[in-house]
Length: 166
Length: 198
Image (tube, rainbow over all chains, first blue to last red; front, side):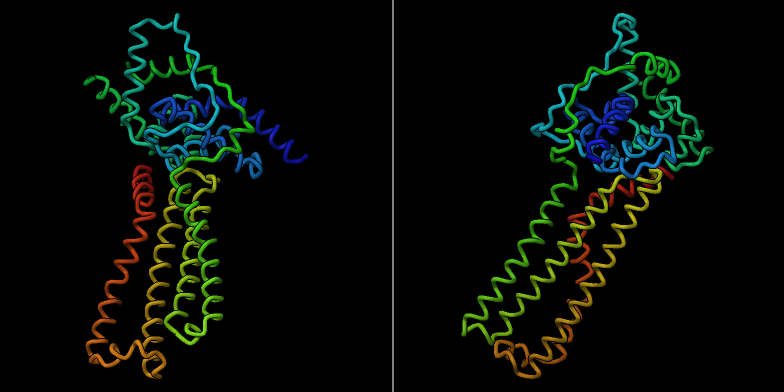
């Protein structure tokens, strides 16, 4: 009964925050299968850690820590693997009519540029895009506030260079 | 496109998902992480080897021709030691799979520390084990308990010492090779990630 309640609470929390998990999957998983695979790995790790979540940090901070950690360490991109889970599809509803063809191209160009960053840089960019404060980013990443600001500037310059050459 | 422009698009377009999944099913499915294969392998070995050791002991006891042959009995402690190693590796992977409770940098450093410590411990343990086997071998020959060892006993003492010396010199390389074979890729990955957080 207790486990059932716990799973129900977890399911609610996951539903509220699932977009964060999808965004991690989107950045770290190359193909749709990779993204599904990573989604499953992250959800399992979140579920394992959930009973120990005491609310000492924000749920989002806790989720990012676990999610990013899974994405960079425990997850391996599979080649030619048979997919086992039944997640129908992990897709974002893009308001296509609001984006011009040019904007969409630019969007893809930026995704492609971000995919060329290393794992930690990707995490920093994602937290930046998610409008997380540098203090929260420090809490998640363990990298000092000052260092994060310097790195963010370097990453912006790096992305500028990549998008210029492509 | 600048990152700032992308940020606006990111926050306005990625607002909802069309995904559907069954949480119960998702949580009960076997994961495909890189450590899963190793964990399964070590678990199977840690279960099978003691069973083989027990069967071998019973077989040695009920077979009069084998009962007093120390050579055959050596296989039993070897199997037990191997079991211990596989079990250690299995528990190591379980530790590695624990979700991150601290920040990412600390967690990565912690995982790397665990792996490197176990590598060092294995090295020292195998060194001790090798010395123990050399002493046992010399004692068995000294007491003339195993006729099969006569040829080795009659070999020049200095040559025997030289062989033992070579074994002790190459043992760390062999131990390290096998440790790297199993965990080397993961150690390199973690080292790379830790350097990225610096």
